[in-house]
Length: 191
Length: 271
Image 1: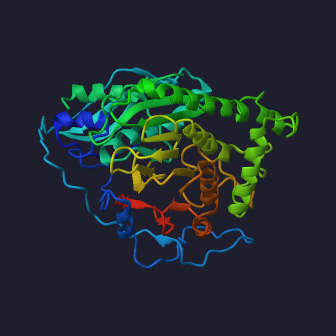
Image 2: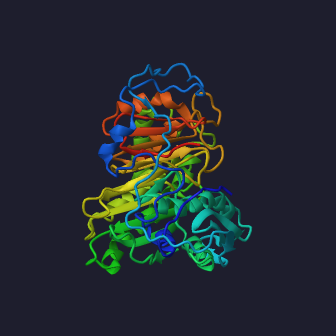
Image 3: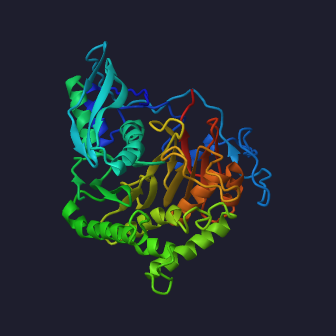
């Protein structure tokens, strides 16, 4: 299972942010998003001023017969800037404990079976959310759905706290079972 | 499966009134409806029901899992276009257009086993479902079909919908956030293993880890995202030339590229 670091400030708000996609106090996550002014207009600042050719060294050459791009339109991502995130607004941080601990929520039914969610926490910081156990009854289709859905369930829970995002493109699933089990796990941890 | 989740009051700044997840089209489709607090979920129910019926109906026509679906029969040559539901001709016509627009990189006719418009149908069906919500007394809605998103309106006053784009190399993370301008589809091989075909070489492969295409039509965005994932970053320029379509890719070495008009809000820092 993937581990994604994520910070939740405000113990009481931590869980609420998972469930309610709350953003302000739960600043951050995942990996630190550069300048998120929250407006499409800010997109311009995220791009280098001069368009450059997009071809990456790792990109295999394309099959002859189609038009080769020769620069100009696509732009290259700016090198990662180690920055953060919008400052938390009037955060009430309560450190419950400084130790690392984890808890697993109860097995709950989801669409194609049942699962439990495990949360690892250090202090009031969630360090990982993973699937504790999974039962899908051995159904082939269920297994294929699991393979798609589980990483996305984790990611969606993380994404919910990262910013004001309404949805995720790539693959996105919302599971009430996942959220409920996560809630229980966090409750056990005093978050 | 009917499962209207009461997630409670969502964001303070948002007005999510209905969150629904539906098991359809071999995956899970979520529908989120945003409106003023005066609108109860019950007022949205008829529109939601129509949207779900639209998804199931389109699935019943186009599913290749269901061997007796009209599309399966057409594929086996047991049904000709004249006797098939009109939507099959409509979709195949749109696929033909998508093949031309993508310079042949999206090609439902190159797939083994016969014509397979699935790369277009999922987005197309999600968009049709969204249309069923247009008459609801709400100010915005999102239909998310396994990562392919159709939307109209806004989540709350003075806000725009924003979407995260999954990091294909670490799907529990987000690699970028963008303003959602209509629809966005993302394709890549990370979700379901190797399933994208290079119509030129005949091999299953992609040249970027994931490709996202944003635009006014989710069916075409879906097809173009598939084409872009297979063709790689050179196709960005082709998509950039299409009016109202923008694109974003993540390479296997984590490099991200996008067309100048892609409404990027932020990029995740990389390790």
